[in-house]
Amino acid sequence: MNCPRDGAELRIESNRRIEIDLCPTCEGHWLDFHEMAELEDKVFGKDKRKGTVEYSRRPSDLKCPKCDETLTAFFYRAGRIELDSCPNDHGFWLDKGEDKEVLDFMKERDKAVARSATAEANWQRAKEAKGAKGSSGGVVSKIKRFFTGR
Image: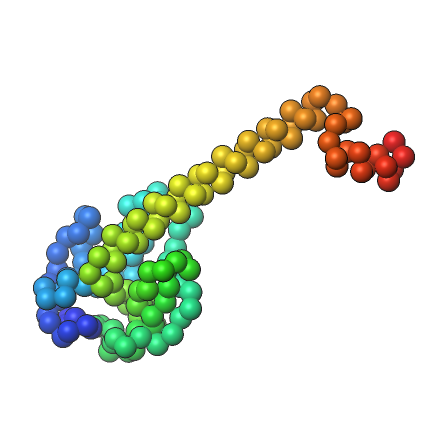
């Protein structure tokens, strides 16, 4: 296969224990479709919600090294990282350093999801504690009593 960016012959290498096709000149990566999932697995375990979500899709300037179809450029998970994918699901083109950007983005997202889950659990505990003290307290209870007459 040849690099969609500069035409150099891609060579197979192992990166983060994933077999990728690397361009020796521009250092871009071709990841087969399943290899992107493996890259995501480096941050999100197999049981976590993941998946390459493509936002703002548009035709790319690059061609698929496997089928020569025009790749689709997109923003990965609505972030700022623009990747390219094959419309026939052959894989993804990542320019130099974008694999690290994807992992960093996912790590931050994983932390945000964990913070959100913690905040939700804390909110639920606070609501339960409030309910245990009786229903005379909060604004919502007062509004309910006003309309129900209780």
